Length: 63
Image 1 (cartoon, one colour):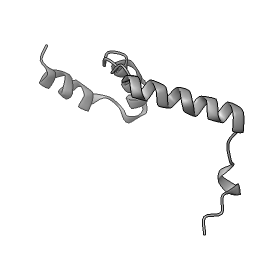
Image 2 (image 1 turned 60 degrees about the horizontal axis):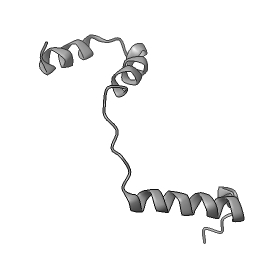
Image 3 (image 1 turned 120 degrees about the vertical axis):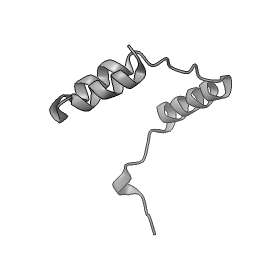
């Protein structure tokens, strides 16, 4: 089966089933492994959130 054939089949899917098919297809897409600096940034962010908490969106002074 070719990719073009799959694309054609996807066009036949009812809109109400699109989300289900998307969730199934996403499982077959390989994930990229995070780079070391990304892992460190996430670790530091999690530590900061644990120590200092977060600020609610509505509490921000946007002016």
